[in-house]
Image (cartoon, rainbow, N blue to C red; front, side, top):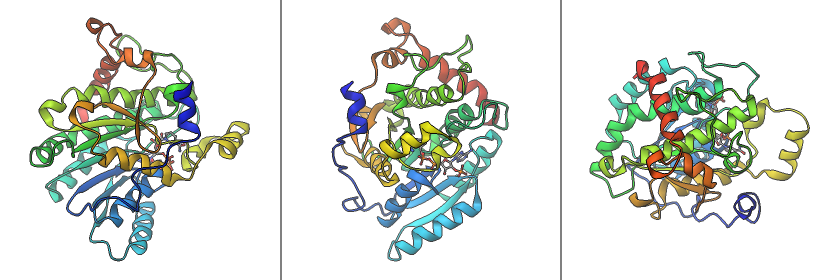
Amino acid sequence: MGNVFSQFYFIPAARLTEDNCPDQKGRVFIVTGGYSGVGYELCRILYLHNATVWIAGRSVPKAQEAISRIKEAAPRSEGRLELLHLDLSDLSTIKPAVDSFTAQQQRLDVLVNNAGVMYPPEGSTDAQGNELQVGTNCLGPYLLYQLLLPLLTKTASSSPTASVRVLWAASIALHVALPTPQGIIIDDDGRPTDQGVSNNYSQTKAGNVFMAREFSKATPHTGVVHAAFNPGNLRTGLQRHWAGFGRWVTETFLVYPPVYGAYTELWAALTPELTPEKSGAYIYPWGRFGSLPAEVESSMKSKSEGGTGIAAKFVEWCDKQTNAFA
Ligand SMILES: NC(=O)c1ccc[n+]([C@@H]2O[C@H](COP(=O)([O-])OP(=O)(O)OC[C@H]3O[C@@H](n4cnc5c(N)ncnc54)[C@H](OP(=O)(O)O)[C@@H]3O)[C@@H](O)[C@H]2O)c1
């Protein structure tokens, strides 16, 4: 219970903010969903500290507006701010975006898989016919990561240990709102089964944690460090599809300004405490290591290790769904 409470209230002060972020000149970041909410605040802080930041998103006008606002607020920045045009709910858009990125950038230091959709209208799907949340929150980020892995690995080979990272946005749902303690109810193929819109969202957030941990197994070979994080409970556009009493309660009692979520992401991206040995760790608001429920941990172990192997099966399913687009 303490693990739940400490993610809502009396959260320790953020240790990395716009005030003490180290200089990021020469470092390259991709932040999906970087033109709004938590992602916007992260891009703003990184650019202020001279980073090259690519905002990955699907709306050109929203990106242009965010880029102008961020640049106006930091006229002395020596950073660069660009749009990486892709739609995570259409797998066919991701490779062209990565090809364009790799034609223009020789390195990628940090990929922040921040974008997400929550509680869309029942029956919403991505362009490939997958449930919209699983498509946007898991399959798109899976493919984006796979396509960027060669560049991440190359960057890691000539960068300080554990400085090249991939971050995966999870949620308090891991502790309070899973349809099963194991995280995802998969079918025989590893596909998440339909548990209704709100449980489906929670399953995708478990999927993000599963990906961070599964991919962390390759850290000793790639040098790329992974972490999943709960950004905190924040007032953003994420609740846009949510109406009624639940939304009122949440907005009134449970949420913080989005910049706090950016502090969680900033810590995950930059803290020296995230070493290769800690790759696959889980991070609590506003930047500190935290634990996951035992059943979720069990999903991330193979049967031979005493677990259920659910995470590996789910990631294998993601691979099968996306490999035609790689
Ligand atoms: N807010 C919270 O309390 C909270 C709590 C726990 C976890 N999180 C997680 O934190 C992350 C950031 O959420 P937020 O609160 O900042 O929400 P937000 O303000 O709604 O931002 C979400 C971002 O994702 C983008 N996105 C959605 N669908 C996309 C697609 N198909 N392709 C590319 N980008 C897409 C959105 O762009 P469009 O405007 O184009 O849709 C938007 O920029 C999410 O992963 C969310 O699950 C948030």
